[in-house]
Amino acid sequence: MVETFAALAEPNRFRIVELLRSGPRPVNTIGERLALRQPQVSKHLKVLKAAGLVEVEPRAQQRFYALRPEPLRRLDDWLDRYRQLWDERFDAMDEVLEELTQKEDEG
Image (cartoon, rainbow, N blue to C red):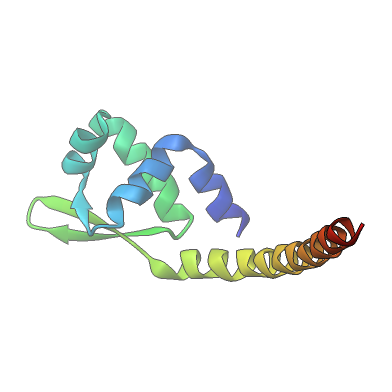
């Protein structure tokens, strides 16, 4: 989980992940779309691959990078615990606000 956060914390790597949401892309296309040089893209893809966020598939002379869903699912599962916690807190706050509004309307 920490590797996923660390990899996504860098803005260019986050942008690469966002770009790959629409499907696999070769390094050169990623660089063109994000206005990054090929060595920069390769460096970022290496970190994303080490974190398990992308996989590479050689096709002829190119390497296509695609997202791997598993680390993102684990991240979503982890975040879901916090969503539930905050939903409960917001529900409790809504109840308090409703009580205060009713008292104000009665007063």
